[in-house]
Length: 196
Image (cartoon, rainbow, N blue to C red):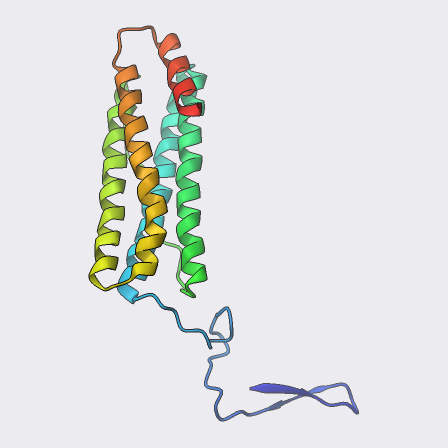
């Protein structure tokens, strides 16, 4: 419907437009006139990846809490920084979906269910989780290539590059964590390595 102001009474009168079939409850960047270039399969995979990245953040916050309570504040800071990075990755995807005119419901984030006992426990879990994340992003890239969605494939290069770096960092930090040094020395080395 178009809204036409009444100049005499400064009121507004609704006039039907037969070409306007937009539901009044429809949310869109441009009143439903924009058409997303993304296939629904790609959009669904990207929304799923948002949940994956947010779960990673929750996992790392859980690990941060464990080390802070144990008195290893530098390891707590390390995992807090990793959580922030995961949230940033999620935001990149969310912005890409927005720029592609995709309307989506924010996905449910799975509950973190891990039991950390020893100080070493989180580091192999981190490597495994980053490996899972890399596989998930590569799967989206493969699907994008399959349907000739070069726009999404190009966007994903940013995340793929990040994952190469994160996998390398995670493996190096696992090596540091497995060394025979005192944990006070190791936590300092881990935070220093990650922060450089």
